[in-house]
Length: 121
Image (cartoon, rainbow, N blue to C red):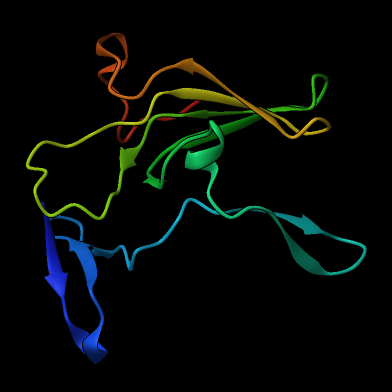
């Protein structure tokens, strides 16, 4: 579960098992521009725009022909200290040219139970 961390007067949380600090983060999404040598913000919170929530240990793969990124699994981090059961992210796709996110399989889908510590080929 998550526990509070009050350093510097903040109301931050950490996942007690993994020691990952959550810090009230959103699921931001950036793209690196090689020519300009800078990161550009695509979304400050993909979870509120139909994409995945704040997750870790997920997998991503790019279909360069379709210009689509697929994001699968991983554990969902949230700011609730009341959750005792782990939540797992579903399967999403992100179409790069149109900036459109689509849910292919919802979070915590019982058909996708092995969603943590896996790999894609």
